[in-house]
Amino acid sequence: MKKRVLALIIMSALTAVCLSGCLGGSQAESGKDSEEPDTIEIWISESVKTDTQKQVQDFMETNPDMDHYDIIIKSVGEDDAADAILMNTDDCPDLYGFAQDQLARLVSEDTITPLNQEDAAWVRDQNDTGSVAASSIDDTLYAYPLTSDNGYFLYYDKSLITDPGSLETILADCEKAGKDFCMEISNGWYQTSFFFATGCRLKYHTDSKGNFTASTVTYASPEGLTAIKELIQVSGSKAFKDTCSPSKAANSAAIVDGTWNSEEYKKLYGANYACAKLPSFESEGTTYQMSGFGGFKLLGTRPQHDQTKLAVCQALARYLSGKEAQLARFRSRGWGPSNKEAQNDDSVKSDPALSALNAQLPYMIPQGQYPYNYWIVSKTLGQAIIAGEYDKADDKELMEVLQNFQRTCESYAR
Image: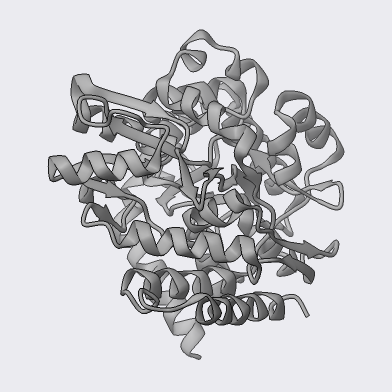
């Protein structure tokens, strides 16, 4: 009962906020007074809602046989989609954008439809191999790639940061200027940039239904000890701020974030706006290049009893994930295309943020499927580091912290 009530509260709030996104006329306007119009509901990030409204309108104009569908667009971020859907699987959207790490959960709960044979062939032909792999489980394609940019790199003020390739220099420059170095190490997504840099592994394996069956975790190791010590040192800098939000980075000289906020940082740093791959850090005479996850934004369709409606949803998904739609989102919000032709567009190739991301790609780990609880336990670890709980811990005590963390992560796939 609590689950149902919470879902209703969330959906009511979304409806109140996002009802203005409804496209298509009323029954009276469409001349269909005698029948209830079919509705297709789309969840997409607020940042590209306007683009999506325009693209849906164009789709309907070029497909007049489908114009009896009312399209409702609601603002739900890719990171939040799976949680909201799985709270109430009986009342989920027909199309929804989501981050690729949520795919296993959506498949296991039968809330996403595999692509038909024709669309699967089209997706494989049009998009880069990483985004195709991220959309698949056991060679079955479940989603339409929207981006190939869900990674992070360094934005910085080039008038203040003298060497963006060195984390030690970045922190020293920020401290000297009284500025912030922003990175959300309480978030398991960004936190991996330190552990993967030193050689740690954290990977889960799933079966064809998206269930977690095994894991490979090596945080309780000398490599993990090096990483957690570096995290403690970074968080102890007076310049450090645990955020990846532009709204909280007004005093920053450097911030680790992704392409989706590039426009905000252009405004923040002005003529001194610059981007680079993540820096390296040094520990006991060894230099480690910061790593981290690389990921993708995807578009899924829900299962339908009405096969005609399913066909319309899939046609719309194909349109929204095509070359022109991806280029439109790049131009308005800086979203990096997964479409291979769009990636070769001159405006995409010359973009500073995407260039920095491309420079970081060789050091990134493609993000697979991760249990929801991983994100909770990694947040707890990061918060404890920031709170200074391990500042005075010796190597033995830190290894115990890592062993507990590793055992907990491994328990999610037993």
